Image (cartoon, rainbow, N blue to C red; front, side, top):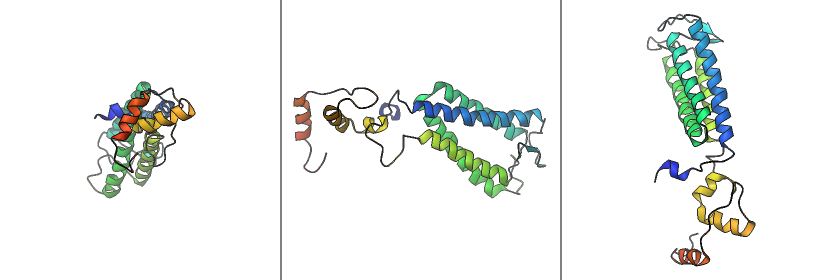
Length: 190
């Protein structure tokens, strides 16, 4: 089974994923452009500041590329934007931890300061939150498209009792197929 087979194709949360990717991508794009416009050397570690964060040419270029990647995800939208947000957000969090240990060391080639580490954590959490919103939870509501795609039998039963669930009707099976499927299940399982 592939991940894309389990994900709903079109749902209202796609807008959240797009907006999150676009906002975070725009912030990174502006930061990268400002750093490149200042003409910072690629591997300088002298503490040059851009928008309150220490930067160099390499960090500006990386920020520019990641910003463009997030903006591309916002254009594509849907599950692709959600997955991209989760991957990029997790990368930001990992980068924050790695650079926390590299502060003040010669291996700090991106010229990270403590403000950069805090920014990396905050931006990472923000991007991950946009990516996981409505997708990862212990108690998704039954009208959530992810819950419905993970529990199709129960969603069909509930749709038959309450009418179609939010987001469109669900395919139904004949009553005979439903009783045949429940007869094969061991007692106590639903």
